[in-house]
Image (cartoon, rainbow, N blue to C red):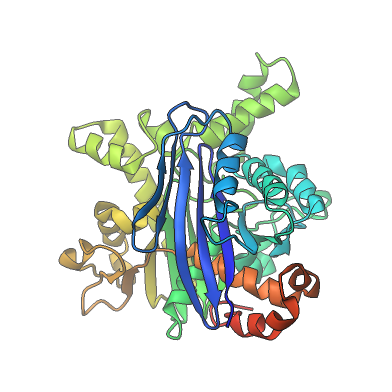
Length: 427
């Protein structure tokens, strides 16, 4: 049968990462992946490699702006040298109460994202920009936004409702959670043996933890915004609200306007805090670990703070779940930092977690708990792109308008419905 080429876009502050998948009946195959790095410099990198790792594009262009960088990607993918995408999926990190589902990208959706950009200022403006550019540079190709909060929609009201006056709750202000695509990918990879009581720790520059019962989220550490929860690379995580008022008043003494004061407070809690703020050195765990070995006490405190908050969160979720069958580490730190995993598990011995030191040094997907550990501990890399592909194909199959946008749509309707992989989706 004909296959559906799906482009996945994920843009950061100085890079645009992308991958192209071929979606066939019951299977997904990555064809290419690539990135443009160094946006805003004259020493950028643009590369594409195939599924075997062979470099197909390897350039060092000047990348003065995100617009130049993304046009470079679009021009290559539209050139005929590569399979042109017939659908595009985007990770949508947006706390807008109206945008928690996976949706077709329209100008109206982008405008709604931009209305709430201040709730996820490190992600939403960039994501909205890339969506708008994709609509223009890939004309006629349907775009879909996959919400990073969609997985958390199963949380009960007691977990989502915030202790705030009703006028704010009535605006839709509530805990929504993030990293949902990562969590969904872990549940997908554990099928058909998803444990009843599961905790997943997504640990990277952004870090969060989720409690999952029978494949459905019941609680997660991040709140209305990615700033909440456990300490991250440059974010505070949960802090005393009175502290924010204290900092805001100090800032307001010299600020020329309330907007300037709010912007400075946002920079403090999202860009200057977390591991960077505590250590005064870096938000990179690799740098901090090296500094700890060298005797840097602030780096030691930052690392200890990180693991301490994670242990506390996992302990609370243990109580919420009524026990624990499996703990999964994922994300850049969760997958690669053996010391962080060891320190976290050492703090969880009372919960029945016993780590195997030799297994803990394994690379990639692995069981790292001891044979006699009552709780299984695993390392599983996330498969976020694959989850986005699955959602894109499903949405295409459900929207006759989207299918009509595709070549030979009538002959593809049944095939696309067969392609939609619902086994990895918790409905």
